Image 1: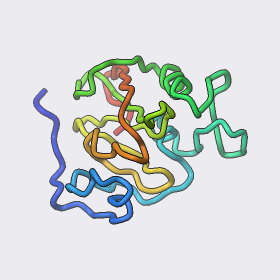
Image 2: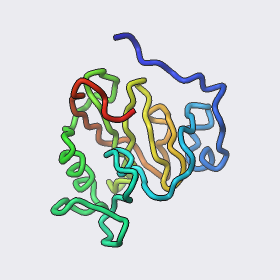
Image 3: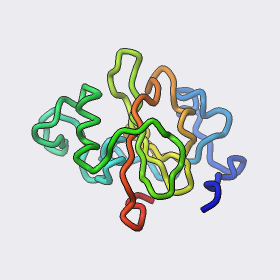
Image 4: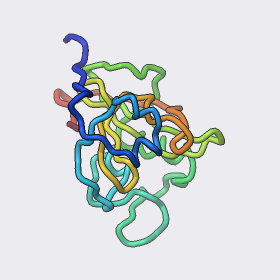
Length: 163
């Protein structure tokens, strides 16, 4: 299998508010791939559940797996993805046989965001309660989401689950 495809960034819709929040996007390295939808967020999106908002606040419409550490901890987010068959890796590159996620955390180690890698090699993110976007891994790093600090992968079972 050859190199992953890349979007033609010159033809994508722009979002000035998103670019203000994530200055790395100003170089054109993203594409909006869905309308805004407040019913789910990045963890929900990364595990494939767009019906629930994944957090452990104990309110109807919110979900957090029983027995998993707090959603306010990196250990909690890692545990969620381990439940879904992921294991930690140091490799953030594209591997066609694996699905990958990247957990972003602030400087003090609090998880802020998670993105999942697509078969194109690009990453897909649910931006809070806003749009889903396709982007390169590092362009959303910064003040709001911190840095991608944990990469996890799981084998594709013949076909990628998330596309």
